[in-house]
Length: 255
Image (cartoon, rainbow, N blue to C red; front, side):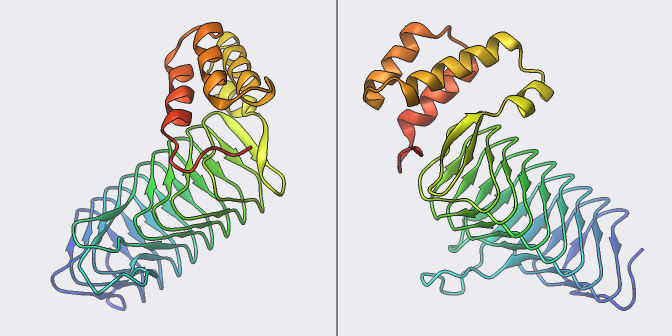
């Protein structure tokens, strides 16, 4: 299941039932779990740690060296979980400093030409759309979507179950359960379609919508809006997630 035309460093560790196609490149200091498939001309570089059942397509690069002026050649990691799809020419860049890691969770779909920069953290079941660029130290929470050609500036965070429409760029955090759109980017709506498909109840959707009406439409300060949400919206883990996200946002949330 390993082509003799592929290059695999003798120190690389490959699990069971791994398929490596012709002209793939697997570097030293690499671990690839059971059931992975590495397509032709893909490069798995030093510091890569792949879990089980990942598929890496043609021309993709996993664990590229950081494009960071503070990088001094240290050993660092790019950790990829299980059941991820990494499409053609996508690039995953490892962390800048020794002991740190770029981390991708489980069940993600990283589309053609997407880039995850150094020290990025991606949760589970996310979609990174064609050509989207995620700058260093960003965080993408579970079940969120960057559609095509999104630019996520350094250090920003995308909340769980949120969607960013194509071509947008953002320099502030995007809270959970919403659709962000336009230029300059702004809150557009609740992410109703995806939430319904994920079996959020109609009652919970109404509570989420009520929380965001208070946050974005009540013509009051963010501090007072959060107090009103706690007083007026029935509590749930999802509402608490919104409150905690806004309260802990280091860069502030989009308008």
